[in-house]
Length: 313
Image 1: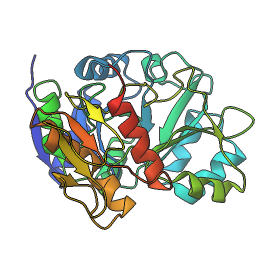
Image 2: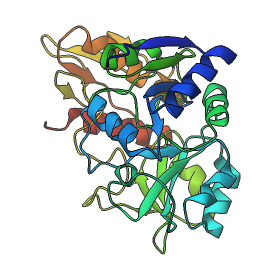
Image 3: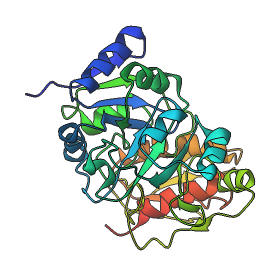
Image 4: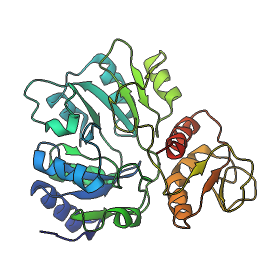
């Protein structure tokens, strides 16, 4: 039965309705500080299968499990001193940790794509926290968009991509960070950066007192590692100084352009604007040229998303 897609207000009644829908095995999109997630009970294989179906997501691509509190993580994974250091420093927040699963963890195998690890996060967004607390269980939640397309940072983005395919979206305005979480793997000898994201690599390395290893990219061990991802319908050209004929120009810094990620050159502002600006330009159905973005701090994550958006499909 098609439930349609309800737009719920992020108040007590809306959160209670969203929690009840999750408990009944339905899909609910909700805001986090990074992007809007598409939530399902991570213990319910049928519900998780609906996430893959709604997004058109390949089943070998694992999902992030969202939790209300850090201590809940130890129900599902073998916790470590390094995990404790990073969780203490950055949870709640835009950091995902990949850790070895415990026996009898109870999560759907679809969540982990058959791997012996799982990606966990405790989001900082108040509405996400309220929903996760009300549901009181693990919620698998990739970004709430068709697989491979631009991630959603507003409820309108979610409706545009998934209307009629999910039960509800909990609307609480635009996401503040605007980039998916940084993912760090803790299942090997050295902590490994699996995906750049909303928490700069430098901050993580400072907390650890050591550099992160870098993923070789050969295997899909965490979300967001597909070579083509976060993509508009049309082509994307990077490191452009100006637009060519028929292109739209996404700028950074002081320049003439169709939309500017940050006229002042602020990487935090640019990260928050990235997906919304790509959505706006994509709606005009023309190729997109993008100005160079400094490759440090949040710029590393912005460039990661842009490279995947521009990759051959």
